[in-house]
Image (cartoon, rainbow, N blue to C red; front, side, top):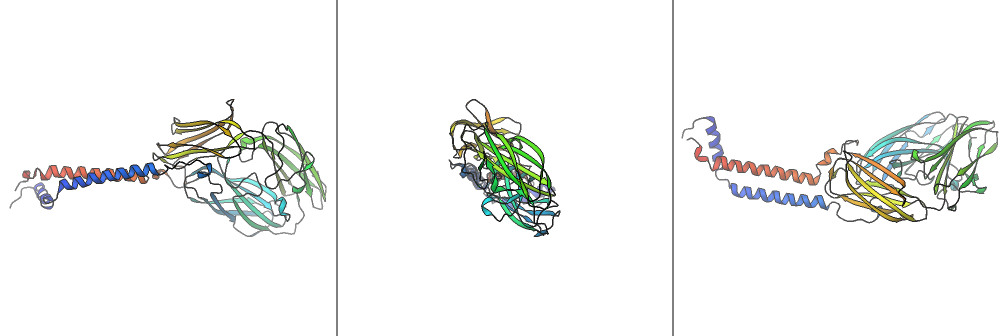
Length: 458
């Protein structure tokens, strides 16, 4: 047998190796495999979140960011820099966007039922994006005031998103924190100046500031007189700068600031001075007052939460059950509640926009809102890796009482989520496409080399 040309050799070899191959059967099997893959892929994409959930806490999980943060050393001296190191772990199956780490340093108080003496509180890190189940390293530097007194100090940590949603800890309380660590400050200085937490008064009456207050003022209350003693236990007089900041709800969101003022005072040795402020509290049901004193290389803070009866709903949390969106039935959801025990009607709105700012989904309802946290959710069947999720609450007059715009971008995480665009369902479709290409190749070979094998020159 004689061959003419290299092309004829290749054709003959192909004919020898595939002459006994059942192409019709192979094509049938390939198309059957594609059908099965597409069916499974379609089912898995739609079945990921098909179970309807009716409670906010089916989605929102308090204390779901583990804050493992501690001082790099155990003992420090006044003026030292303390390096706090550790990790933030998102224990949710969905990402968290726009997070902030709030840290508070307090001197341990021997009288446990009034809480620890706050020295400083600050936002250590912002713009934290955590992928689902991600563990992210974090660190913060804090310089101890030069006059810091000896004792055991507490680092309490809190994690919020969008400067408003409490994920771990409640930053407006002294006893519910997201993380906790201790370190010691050594030195001979024992005397210090501090706010007398047990001496706080409202309208001339003793007022408990530790834990949740059981004192709720009438809805028509317009003025509250606050008195807080600042004590100087030292042997010399101290000149101190006092700053007052009054917020609605809490201080995590700078937009909640209502009023602020400052003053300079002098406190004689071994004495105390009562700081007074008459607050205008007619506009909101919940107020949060922060007073800070700085003097003689020492800091002291006191936080006071004031609650009235009334109605003002707020957003408790807003998010997506999955991101990026793959068209597989993820849900957008928001949780809402009234800030006190009152109730009333409010309009709740949830809106999803694509990367171009175009509205692609919206849901709203008018709901009777109480202190119980309620849910509004909507299934999203779109494919998006960049979007804005917006939510707002309006009263029946159309006034916006609370709102948030959360920007999701798959590239804005410590590890990109854009690769997840090809999720499990998408991989099924990918392999289906590969199988179709294989079928097409088999069909081409069948047509080109088997049916037309008579073209081979021998």
